[in-house]
Image (cartoon, rainbow, N blue to C red; front, side, top):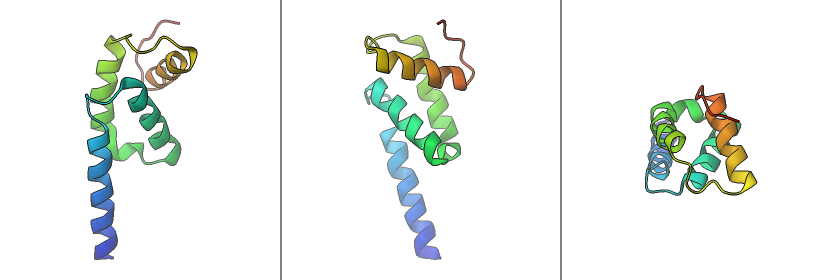
Length: 84
């Protein structure tokens, strides 16, 4: 059981490192989407909120339909007021 807990903590650290402001914003949104679908996003709420705040204020990098719709859906799901 101790080895499993240690492994879980290692994986949490790795995911927290993936959620960094230097990562491309579309890649961050895809990561957030994957974390939500896997049901583990609650482990990283504070990191996700911080990154979403930066993504909400920026529109650079969201020129295509996929990235724009992903940004719109995720930000709306988390309570941000994003215009259609």
